[in-house]
Structure formats: structure tokens, C-alpha cells
Image (cartoon, rainbow, N blue to C red):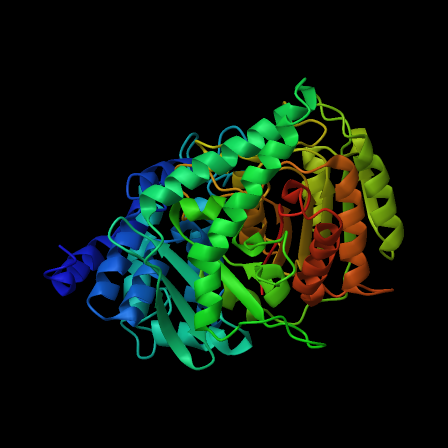
Length: 520
């Protein structure tokens, strides 16, 4: 299909991709919208592959942005510039649309097991999106788009607008499709397609399975009588990092002219947007770390992630942040989970280092207390357990003290409106790992906090060492500045902290490769 008539295939795929938002309609709660989008996983990647085969990288970018992060895009739309632009002309209609969106958007729909935010009291019991409100939303939206200058109202941005996001450093989408694999790099000079002929979907799936298996064996090695079980698993992880460099990140950086470690200079920022199963693998840590040649992403760049280009753009265009206020949540003993003795010390140390920080610790860190405190603070540091739900990502949760009765899930977090929030540091397990079913939706704890309003999130891709996490957190906050930390330094601070541990333990990547920065 892609070899003979890729243009026709891209057009047909494009029609299908453009229907994806309907699958995540306001008629559905978030958990049902996730399930609906699961049925179309891989569609945007295949569509983009056909567009690239037809020689149209701009259309490939449009298709990836339209078909990925659908739920995230709806949440970002709650706070974008379109409503403000409409409000300047017609405040009554703008306010009505804002009200309707809070009732209809899957990102703010109630989830029965996580009532962190009260449902609309006017809604019939058991109905989160009444049909009459859906009809009013659609009628009003159609009417607004008929006005002069509003044809693109609350629609994904034109690709030409997204191309401006490369001004601060390359933004690299790595597309994995059954047809072909490529990187699309948005740079200051425009959009560039980088073919990745050594990368294939089947191998990515196999590598992901093997990588997650090595992590599982490493965790089990603590109780293994074989003293070599841990080192063997670390060697396997290191091998995957080398493969990622040889197959994905190395060719991309070479094509962009980022070919060495800058001497005495700040390395360039690079944002990675992996697609499909590649989202489980640590592109930021790719490289050959046991040699001194500098063939690693961490040595050549300051790496960050973004779920989509438009999510990155939304974070960048936010209004100046208010003076920072700090919330620290420490849960060293969550019911039903193994104790984390380091969490108490980490919480106390971080709270002492942040001016005026409020500390919620132990039994005081209930779901309602945390949700209430988030509304009054622009920074969050959470140290404790996090769980990643592979089959229903919106059920992934932070284990607050009363999590058995009142879970704080991705669904609950994403419903919060924290428009002025700046930075969330999640010192917990797997807070940036997507579920297996909707890998292109960014439905993990870090994504939920971005959806709620945080510009920057520091998270982890797998379970982290309790003691070492304290050291990394201290190094990150030191890199953010004193006496008042600056959130926009987060990417540099995370890189410096991770490289410091990497340089001490190059043969044990599980200790340092999990930490990532998400945001502008």
C-alpha cells in the first residue's frame, strides 16, 4: 500500500484520524474514552508513515498531532487562547462554552471510583454528560466557527504554527509504524524527516518486552540467591540503551549536527516525543555509557519529553507564574504497600530547603487534604509509592495515606484546574510510564499533572532506589537555584543530577536512567 499509492493511503488514513476526537466524545467518562481510543492505537503512526512515503512530512506532523494525545488535547483546550479571544468579543458565549466543557470533557468527567471533585449537581444521577448538554456544546461550537476569524476555534493548531516550536531547540517525534519508522525533527530551520531504516515495529515490541523483563528480574534479584542476577540484568539494560543510541537517537542527533559534547558550553535542548511502544523505553538515557566517547544523549544534549507538540506549545505560552508556593507530600507507609523509610527523610529535607513549604506527612496526607492543598500551591513534591496500571492507565495512582478508600488517580488529578501550577516532582515509582493499551495518550501520573496545569513534571519510568532517590532530589533542587528555585531550570537540573549518578555508577543504569523531565 505505501509502496505503490502512498498518497491515496495517507488521504484515507487522514479521514480516519480526523474522526478520533469523536471516539473521546464528551459523552464518555475518561476511562471509557481511553478504552475507545485503544481500539485505534497505531492509526496515527500508520497514517504518518504513509504521508512520509508520499513525501509530505508536514502532513505527517499534522496526522501525528491530530491522532495522538486526543484526551490531553481536550484538557489543554480548557485553558488555551481561543476562549480568551472569544470572550473579548462575546463574553456570554465564551463563559457558556467554558461551563459546558467542564461538564462534558472526558478530562473532567467523573470516575465512580475516584470522586475527588464533586459532580455537577444539576446532572441526573449516574449521568456525567447529559445528551442535551452535548447537543448544546456542538451547536454552540459550530456557530462560533462560522464567525470571521474563528474557523479553527478549539481545533488542533495548523502544522505551520507548530513549526515555530523548534526555535528553542529540536523537537523530535519518533514515529514507529508497521510500514516504516522515521523521526520528524522540528528545528529553527524548519521540519526535517530523518528515516530510521534500522528501526522496526516488531523489534521495538520485542525490545520493550525484554527491557521491562530485565527491570522485573532486577527487582526480584534482591531476594535471589544468585549474586550475578542483578549484574546480568544491568548488562541487559545497558545493551538496550546502546541499541536505542545506534538505532534511534544517534542517527537523529547526527542528522541534526549535534555530533559532540560541547566544550565549556551549555549543550542544546532536545525534546523527544516517542510514539507507540517506544514510549516505554528511555530515549533520554540512550547511549554507550561504559565508554568515554560521549556517545550518549545525556552528554550531547539536555533532554526533555513532551506528550505532543501542542502540549509543549501550551506550556510555553502560559502567563508568567505567580510567586512560588511549595507543597511537600511524604507517605513513607501507605497501607498495603511496603514501607519507604527514605520518604520521610526526603520529605523533611525538601521541605526544609524550600522557603515556606507546607509538609503533609503520613496520616495527614489524605486524598482530600492533598487535593485541597494543591489549589493553594504552585509546586508539588511527592515522595512515596506510585502505581502504574498497565491495562487502564487512568487508574494509575499516587498512594496517599487513605488510598484504599480514596485513591488519587490519573483521572482524579486530571480533573483539577491548577492553571498557575509550575513544577511537580514525583519521587515515586513509574510515574511517567504509560499503560499498555493507549500508549499515545500520555495517560500516566505525569501526564495527569500536566493536564491539571503543571508546566514541568519530573517523574520516573520505573521503580527507583529509595535511598538514591533522596540524593537525586537534593541534587535537582540544588540545580533549580537558591534561595528561591526556578522551575524553568528543571531540565538542566535533572540532567546534571542524573549524569552525576551515572558517572559514579555507569554499570548500573537502573539507578539513574529512570528520571525524566517533561515540559518546556
